[in-house]
Length: 171
Image (cartoon, rainbow, N blue to C red; front, side, top):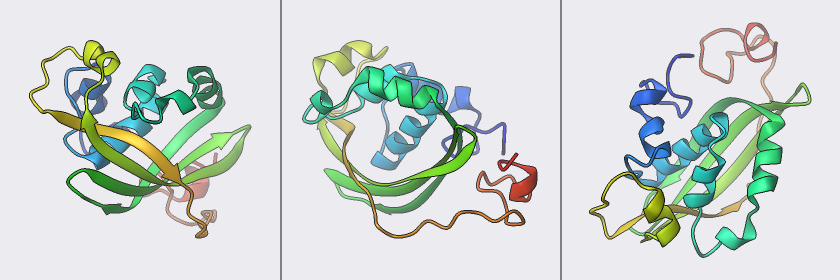
């Protein structure tokens, strides 16, 4: 599991999210985009995070703020909770686990993704011709009020390794 792409697929990074990060492909669905964005945090691909953010809401984010926060995090695991798919809009609920200042934390989000026309910035970053008229973009987020249970020492690890939490990500 540790050698697989951080997005949760069974493929290695070079055969999975790397092609999206390098502009050789676009996400086929909103869930794939969400997973590739999580993976972009791990690989410090802040440009990708900005470019895949909807042009409608991109002005509300800061490259330097994202980079600063990301540099302070050690990403551990992604758990997709629910996906509600639509043709033009999809919601993905997930929990991303990380350590910050040595403390285990989580980011629980209900993301909205929208299919939109490519903007010039994203189009110029691509190393391919895109045949689709529209592609998926991250649009916005809500933060569920439901409680996320912190793992206990003897629970299976949040990363899916099959090892007890205390012998894996709790270290």
